[in-house]
Length: 57
Image (cartoon, rainbow, N blue to C red; front, side, top):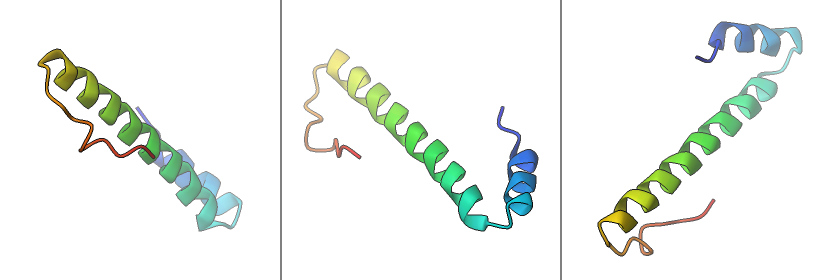
């Protein structure tokens, strides 16, 4: 579980919302990446062609 409160406090301590956005973006991209990997593996198992839908980040 991600402690969003501590991330926000870190952001305030550094006087930078960019710092918080940077962390959020990294987490977001990691989740999207994991989702695509799962999505590809799931569809490959059922022998679907998902190459059209897969957009690498």
